[in-house]
Image 1: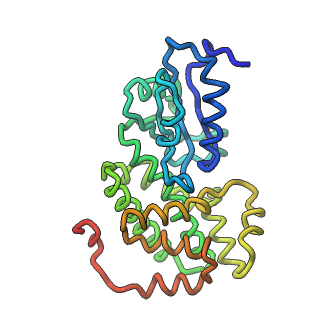
Image 2: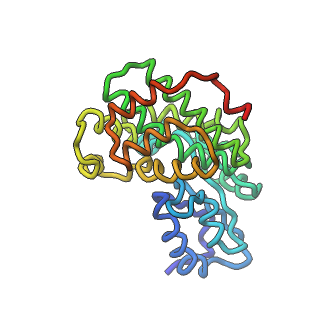
Length: 279
């Protein structure tokens, strides 16, 4: 049982594809024990796009939350191991509800754990979701020993694909230059603790090995695997040109050989760097 009067903040840190089930449990078990006259902020740390519905975390939880619960999205460059060690970290809390942002800052902000607020929920969620897919491709680049230049190109062009999707969904452009966009992208594409980068690296180092074996070896949820499919479908739905996301989807879900996918990416027609902005 839960004593609702003792709860000041709820953090849902679960894989995106499990978020709906967790939300249902919260609705049926946890929410009824909250005091009806007490506003309790809920921060969601899930990063991804739901398969099937193509919904972002705030849309999933929005179907399940009672009115007295304020929702925020917690994101940014933050490896759990470094958090546990008390190493300096900066994250962002996104919510259209000022109460949620203020509560998160008051309850979580510390000298070694800096909390920044924004109202761009969609932009923060997209950054957290898409960076995992880009990190898988960055891992492939590293595994094939294509060089630092190639990895930098993937990170930068991947950021462009992230921003392009954000523009189509009404996100604020500057969000993608912040902690949940560029910040998390850099960390996940370069850090040795990144499961998504390690997944791509292992695939490239063991061409032809079943992906199920690689996922089992990682031993933890690799969000980029599922998000590669949902991000591809969302990009298609929005009629966007996102070749890096397309490559990830084809390698992970269409059994396209890695070397063939890389060759196709490198042989695309030449175009202007920001052509997508003019469309």
